[in-house]
Length: 611
Picture 1: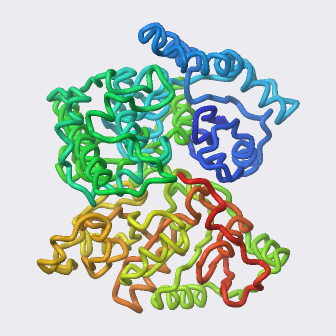
Picture 2 (picture 1 turned 120 degrees about the vertical axis):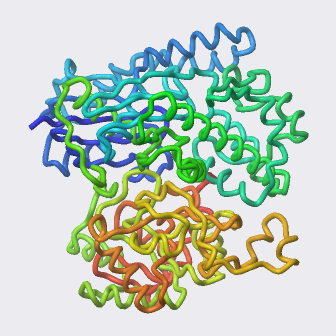
Picture 3 (picture 1 turned 90 degrees about the vertical axis):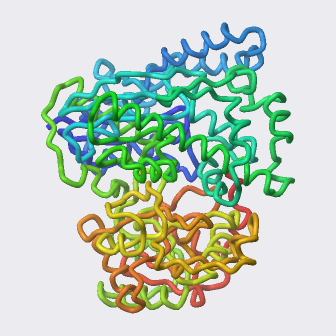
């Protein structure tokens, strides 16, 4: 048995993954333990978890692999400074002390941290460093259900690469093409995230959610920033950006082009201008991704596509690639961002470096992405008792009966079951659930429970066998990474007055039989649920369907704005008592908010920073 620990750390979304003989055993992000969103630190807690889960000590591991090469990253920093001198001096002078102190000597830093964690650790000669984009590509290809695939990775930047194409076959994977920094689709999207007042490396999905409220009227202006060739390759005009030489994403030339300064999220509301900007950059991103997909399908003539990197979390663009039928099949790594680099690095070592045989599974090898911690009924009840919680315990059938009743009565439910998900999406293990048929669900969940912007859409979890009855999709989407339209027979036609509504007021219009998950452009970010990967969640949705005729429920992550998804029973109880959730269903226990003592209530509305 060969045990490999993969680590991603020191930028954002630190994580650890344990792989045994090619099997993905456990994986988790550090933020879930520290409660610091996108925690970039050394993932001590994640490492402890994956080792404990496998009943291993750090000193018993065969290999440790880091998800990127720090020296190459340092080389990029130096060369970028030389290329943009003297303008880049301010950012260079601020970054350099940190690089010299920590990042340039990351191998030593890593060894020191590992030794702190286990004094018997003596694996210095067994530490490997993967390439950032190879880690991403490996995380997408090796767990996929494909013997052969072309892999498209797009993100902000790794060492040098920002976009890569790789070809995988069996246990082999080779990067064939690269686009290098500062030309980056991820950084272009992040520049507009910054410009519209959201947080870079965190708020990109908000920009995507805002896009359907606007019109892409700035598309031509954006095309002054980026020169896109017919094959999808591109170059960014650095005269408009500040990320290569300064401490912000955009500069005055950028602001003058669009006619406004960046939005201050603390002082300025989102306007139609920001919606139109969001719509425009989303459309340009989709066009580039479709062009790239077309050109690599034509060049390599491979029928399967795998996607990874932060841009692969743009599920609208993914849905467009699917819609265009460029590839026969698409598979996207659920932990597509840097957290998934820990997984990819471990798999790259096992298959590419050590040339081990790969067995392809018909679904995939991600185990539904349920790879995190889980808690026994005894642990859950002990924690709840120590907190002074009031709860009832039920058997399996009664738990489903009562929970489905509450859902059909439009109650908001915290749902905490089984192993925590790996990646940014809640997939029915650490979720907040609601009735999709209610016109009030979206607004109530956003403002009273998530404490976030009212425009943010919610995702549907749908029984896999019913997906094509409700949505324009006939494939499984277990990781909520594909967007599709609501079927026409479920849509409610708009009045002439409704068609003239603009901006956020579009939210008030009932568009379908399931308004809570229908975005303003009639789309939904779909999670299909099957009995094999999550029996309890599947059975709950099936029970809800029996009662209502609707095989769909609202699924959003169990957290509030700015907080990582809950990990432990304590996290779940705190979030339950700090929001207007009606019930918490945790293990076999159900907690009714009305029965909890007032003194246990918390104010979560201002607990976490804007994200």
